[in-house]
Image (cartoon, rainbow, N blue to C red; front, side):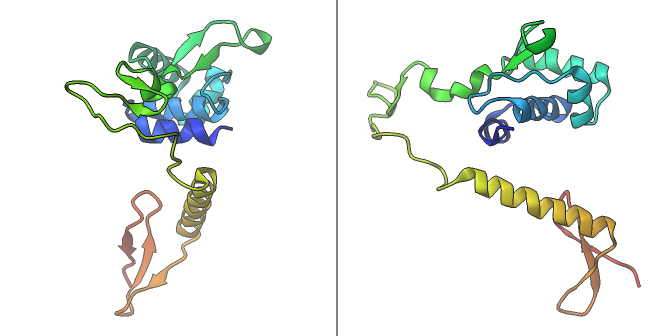
Length: 168
C-alpha cells in the first residue's frame, strides 16, 4: 500500500466518480512512486464497488487522460502492470526544475531551495483520518447516537460528517 500514491490521487487527480475509485485502487497497490501495481480487474472492481466491465472502462478512461499506464501481461504471473505517470508532477513540466519555478518573462522568479514537506508525517495524518472514518462508519451502522446542546439525539453521517437528527 502506498500512502504517497493515494495522497497524490486525492490531491492532484482530475479523474471523477468510478474512474477516481479505480485510480485509488491502483494507487493502493502501487509503490510510493506510483509504479509496480498489478491488481487484477476483479480486485480493482471489488475495491471500487464496480462491475468488472465498469472497471475496465474506467481504466481506459484513465489511460486516455494520462493518469494510468497499463502494460499488458508485464506484471507477475502475466498480470497487467499499472503505473501512474503523472505522479512526477511539476518537476517534469516545462519551466520547472527540482528547486521550483525558475525565472521567466511570464512566470515566477522565486526559487525555493529544496522540497518542503506538506506535513511532518503525511502518512500519520492519512492513517488518523482513515481510523476516524472507520469509527464513524461503525458508529453509524451500530446506531450510536450523540446528544447536542439542546438535548436532541443525532447520528454523524460517515460520508458528509454532518449531523443527522433522530426522530424521537
